[in-house]
Image: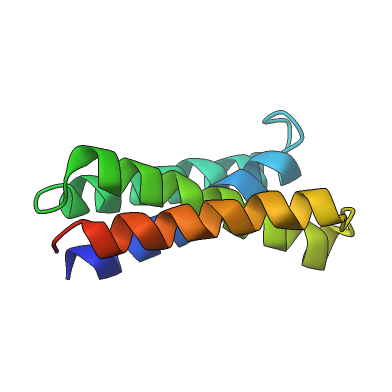
Length: 106
């Protein structure tokens, strides 16, 4: 269950990062509220997952899901550049996340 909570927390991290961009420096009230709510949800789920998962693993996976998720969202929804270096770097993050999951013992 802790891995599911962590995965959802990571998805919420993507959501709040997207909201942060859309809030235009917290000048758009609706997007600002969205950002705060999704950030709080993400932190809360991360804290729940950390009850059972090691700190380093949980935090690295959470930030990794957020980073790769935001990277994919930026490409698909915002037209950000797709380059070999960017995709390769994101792939390395994914390999690291898989390694952490497989070596965590949970």
